[in-house]
Length: 147
Image (cartoon, rainbow, N blue to C red):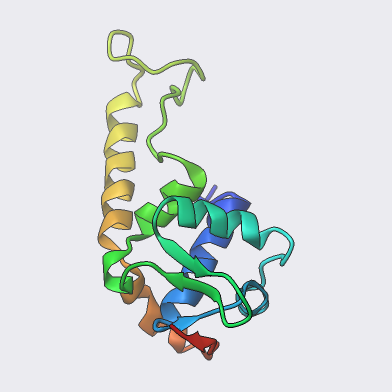
């Protein structure tokens, strides 16, 4: 089993990466959807979530579009994932499926918590500036309107 994101988290990361690659430009939802293979009908919901979290901004009108609200080096992967998926720290016991508590901690509790902490720390340390150079090697950034 591999750790994976839900669709909303996946699309949020893709959309943010697209905006980070196009820093300094405003991109239309259709451009982001096309470039990042995100269903165009679902993308506005994802972008609204990112706007509410203060990660993305938008300008209405024919010359408008979406843009990253902060420089890519100031946007962590953790922020985007948690904006879309909610907090990554689970409160359900891995073994019992019920609420997790320290009084009756299962044998996995401490180890699982360490693994969660490591994941959260790694995602928090990874910025979209870190991701852009790798992604640029596989795709050409879309160019929208100058912001």
